[in-house]
Length: 211
Ligand SMILES: Cc1cc2nc3c(=O)[nH]c(=O)nc-3n(C[C@H](O)[C@H](O)[C@H](O)COP(=O)(O)O)c2cc1C
View: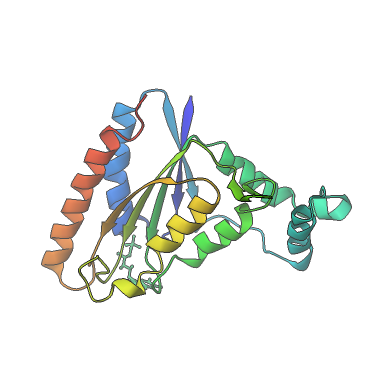
């Protein structure tokens, strides 16, 4: 079986607009992708390890090209478990609202944990090499305001460019985005944009992974 890891970064559960769109995607994905399982990783319910001095020391040991040893290795067990879970997926669905022009802190914490030298990227004489290869990510976002290309607010979008940069850095360059916006201006616009995003999610899910 292949695995789609669904990474959730909103705590709003059934109230979440982002998750309503993701559910529309998943309903079709499950029907059209036999041989795939969907695994949920709800970052708002995970007890992610803190990046203590010891755990950060481990990152520098790896950047130095050395292996983790002794109590550093011990301190890194949870980090490695998260990296292995991330790497065990064949594709990703990321569900995230915009928070303060960027991503919610649960997701940033997760990224700080998994984006590690030797595991997700390495430096080579010719530059950085991302080690997550041949995989695809669907990103579903909802936002209170409107940061689309014809909006004067576009320069405040630190979310989509950041997600493209950080996942591109680790090799995940095949990313699709569906963005429902604006969600918090008026109810008619919210309903219309949400319906549009669900339709886009359904259309994308049908042909997400081409066998
Ligand atoms: C802590 C917090 C910060 C937010 N910051 C922004 C923001 O910077 N820009 C914006 O357009 N919406 C912002 N919003 C609104 C959400 O992005 C919007 O309501 C979104 O649809 C929520 O998604 P959800 O229902 O899936 O949780 C914020 C909401 C919260 C709770």
